[in-house]
Image 1 (tube, rainbow, N blue to C red):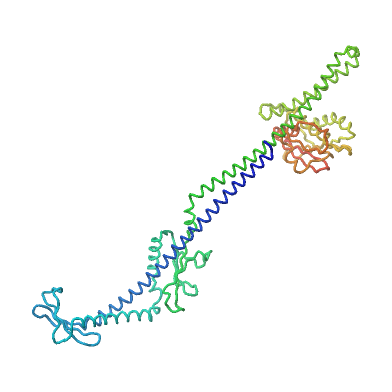
Image 2: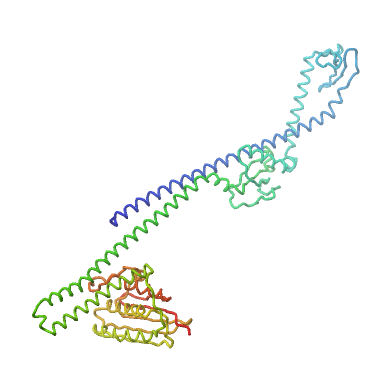
Length: 504
C-alpha cells in the first residue's frame, strides 16, 4: 500500500473520529445544560411553594389570634336565658348594640328550627344579615392587622428554621429533587439571620445559590430572603449522564486503538522498506564476490592461465579473499538472526581488553593508513580484565573501527582515537572517536535499529546491510554493558562502551 493511500485513510478516519467525539461532547453539554435548567426550575418552584406556605401560616396565625379574642370577648355576650317548655332560650347582642333573643325548641334537636321572641320584633333575615356584617368586620380587622403588624413579628417566628427545613424538603421532594441542601434566611444586605449547620456563607460559585423573597409586601428595609444551595448538585446533574459516559469512553478507546494501529502501520511500512533496502544491499554485496569467483573459475578453464604459476597463485588468492568476504557477510546476517531468536550461546571468558584492542589496532592500522589516516591508542586503564565472549567482543571493536573508515571525510585525513579508562564502580570505559562526517541528531536515536542506515547524501560508495551497529548494540547488551554515541554533523563521532570489570 502506498504511503499516500495510508495517509489519506488516516486523515479520513481521524476526521471521522473527531466529528464523532465532537457530536458526543456537544450532546453531553446540551444534556447537562437541559438537566441544569430542569433542576433550577424545580428548585424555583419549590422555593416559591415554601414562601406560599409561610404566608399561609402567617394568615392562619392571625386568624387563630382573632378567634381567641372572639372566644374571650364576644361569646360571653351571648347568654342563655334558661330553658323554656319545649326548647332552650338564648339572648344576644349584635355588633350595633341591638339586643335580641331566640328559642331553640325541642329536646336538644337543633334541626327542629327556632322561634324568635315576639319582643325582638325582628325577622330571621335581619339576624343573618347582622351576623354576616359582623363576621365581615372581623375579617377586615384581621387583614388590617396583618398589613400593619405582620412585619413587627421577628422573622425567626414567622419563618421558623424547623418549619422552613420541613417545607423545603417536602417541596423539593414533590419536584423530584431528593439531594442534600443547605439554606439560610438573610436580610436585604445579605447577612444571615440564621442558617443551617453546613451552609457556606460564601460559596465558591454564587450562581449556584437559589434565592426566594419571603413576605414580599413587608417594608422595604425589612424584606428577608431564603437562600438555598446544593453541595451535591454537580454529581446529581452528572448522574443522569451515566449512560453516555461509557459510550464516550469506548469512543476514546477506539480512537487510541486507531492511532496505535496507524503507528504500527507506518512502522511496519518503514520496516518493510528497510528490509527491501537490506535485500538490495545484500544482493549487491553478494553479487560482487560471486562475480569475481565466477570470473576466476572461467580463467582457470583457460589452458594458458593454468600454465602460469603466478597467474594460478593470483587467481587462488582472489578466490580465497572473495570467499572470505562472502563468508563474513553471511555470518553477519546469521549472527543477527540467531541473537534475535535467542539461539546463540556465548563463550564467556576473562580477557584483557587492552591486549585485545591493541591487537585489533595493529591489524587495522594498515587499512587506516591506506586512506592516508592514522590511528592512536590511549590504553590507560590500569585494570582491564573483563568477562566477555572474545570473538564477539573483537567483532564489536572491529565494526566500530570499520564504520569510522567507511564514513570518513574525503578531503580530510582520517584521525582515529581509541582509549580505555577505569570508572568508579568497577567498570571499564572504551571510547572510539573519529573526525568523520558525523551523524545528524535525528539519526542518533535510530542508528542501533536493525536495517537502519544513515543517509550519506550523494555518496554511493558506502555499502552495507544496516546490521553493523545493531549487532554491536546487541552484543554489548548481552555482555551486561552499555553503549552510547556522541556526534555532530561534519565534526565526527564518538562511541562509548562501558563494561563491568572482573572482580577478583
